[in-house]
Image 1: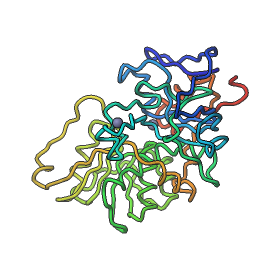
Image 2 (image 1 turned 135 degrees about the vertical axis):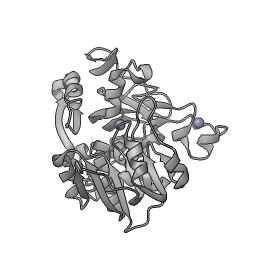
Image 3 (image 1 turned 90 degrees about the horizontal axis):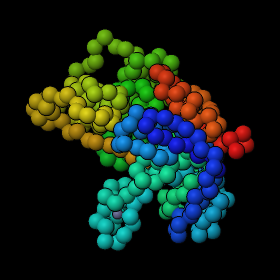
Image 4 (image 1 turned 180 degrees about the horizontal axis):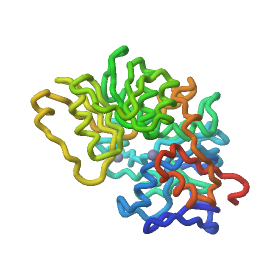
Amino acid sequence: MVSVHLENGTVSVRRRGARPRRPEGFALIRLLAAGVCNTDLELQRGYYGFCGRPGHEFVGELEESDTASLRGRIVVGEINLACARADCEWCARGLGRHCPKRTVLGIVKHPGAFAEYLTLPDRNLHVVPRGVSIEQAVFAEPVAAACEILDQVKIPKGREVAVLGDGKLGLLIAQVLQAHGARVIQFGRHRDKLRIAEAAGVVTECRPKHLPSRAFDYVVDATGSAVGLQSAVSMTRPRGTVIMKSTVHGAVPLNTAPVIVDEITLVGSRCGRMEPALRLLARGTPRVDDMIAARFPLHRAAEAFAHAATSGVLKVLLTATASSR
Ligand SMILES: [Zn+2]
Ligand SMILES: [Zn+2]
């Protein structure tokens, strides 16, 4: 089968190799489409010393499973493979995403989705609802990451929320919080990207001269930059909350005095549940079709990665077409 291999910063395509073996409790899934995420680009840059098959945003058709109701269905999957043991404190609390023994699809010790076939435990899978296209469903994983904010922080409807950053995740977060009923103001640097959020009712500011100071009870940093957190803190009112969505490698400069004096709560936020994400996508929010920048067949993965790494480019999809076989 065709699969993508990442090693020492180089993306290569392998055409030999058998379909993966399906362990008990796991499903064999035939890839339909996958998304290249910033995390994949970071793996390429050498973070986590990654070597192997990347890919964690995917939609596939389930070919083999012990669960009869799943066979033949179009599925997406939760990317954290928890140990699921009864004696695991985290799994027993339903927090498998924090299981210390977990592996992660395409990131930590579980071969990723950039291949014609992948495996995941049945319990990780969610059937894509009617009305959600295959390409839209590719966004289930990052939309779930945006929805995680609402699982962690109670944001009252009608309240103003600032979102910093207009990359892929920033756009999804702004639209998810707006759909929740918050009044979102998104600060970004790209007029064309901000228009996608504007179409969903988000108020935007492109390259403002000054960011407002101590103006919001809730601020989300999705800049992906080392200075985003400091900006987010200075925009937050006393007793407000900063939600940290930028994974930055290395140390981040932060003056902690305002955090302490203004009693600001910092909330780290990562992956989320798929159910609310799929419900939102079935309602047509966020407007993910507008975020697809390009499509490449699996065997052109190197080009897809290069395109995704180009400044200003939103979501690049990999598709399993007949031409990739
Ligand atoms: Zn991702
Ligand atoms: Zn566990």
